[in-house]
Image (cartoon, rainbow, N blue to C red; front, side, top):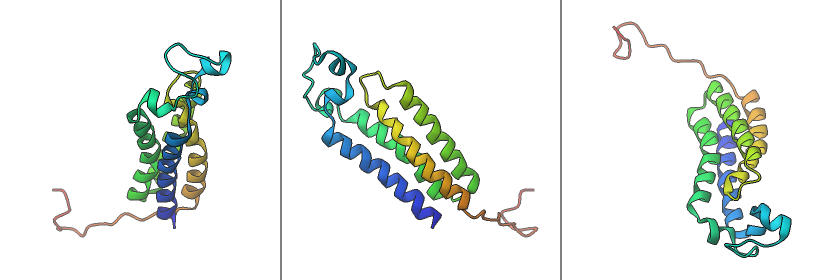
Length: 141
């Protein structure tokens, strides 16, 4: 159950960034458009992907999806909590970059992912470590 929630969070992060790629305009992204309604280098109704490019958005999507994906693969309680902490850090970065004309403000979406991840991590069962028998190839000399 916990693994499927982590994977769902990773897919939700990618879906969120894909949705923003199709719907955001520079009016949504730029503080100059919000204040005075115009900019010197682009029109405020231009699509953000056309002005800022697609690769920065892909990077933001991967940054948002990586912590839940790592938690889903590792399935260790400590890694799950580390993913939550990383997501909270991404949220802070998103808050600090709200005034920049970039996709980094989309990192604010890390907060709901972190909230669901924290709930998931708190109910995640701790998996005991496997002990190797003495003399087995996995034992260090």
